[in-house]
Length: 177
Image (cartoon, rainbow, N blue to C red; front, top):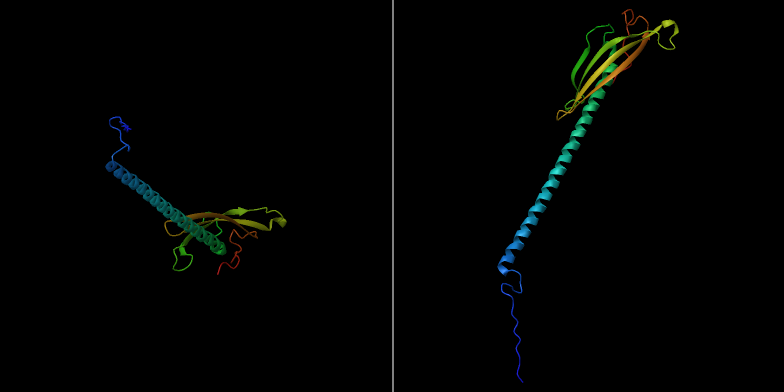
C-alpha cells in the first residue's frame, strides 16, 4: 500500500499569521502608551477641575464674609444715626475702613445721609410726629477683592420740629456693643 501524501499549497504572500511577529510587538506597545497618555490626561483634568471648584467655593465664602461686613456696617450706622445731621443738604456722615473684627481682613465703610422729612404720618395725631428719612450705604470687603454693597433706607419717627433743630433726637437705641 502506498501512502499518498497530500500536499497543500498556500497562496503566495499568506501565512498562518496575518503579520510577522516583530511588527505585532511594536503595535501592542504603541496601544499601551496611547492608553496611558489618555488616562494621564483624564487624571490631570480631574485634578484641575477639583482645584477650580475649591477656589470657587473659597470665593463664595469670601463674598459672604464681605456681605456680613456690609450688614454689620448697616447695623452700626443705624446705632449712630443720632450723630447724622438732620438738615437738608448736609454732607453725609462717612465712617471709613472699619475692621469687623480687629486683626481680620473683613472691613466696612458706611455713608449715612439725611434724605428728608415726611409730614402727615398715618395715625399721627394733629401732625405731632414726623418721619425723618435717612439712607445708609455700606460697602463690605474681604480677601481676594470680595466686596458687597448694601443700601438701607431708615425712617425715624420723632416729634415735629426735630428736623428744624428745635429738638434733638439724641441717641437712637443703644447701638451695637
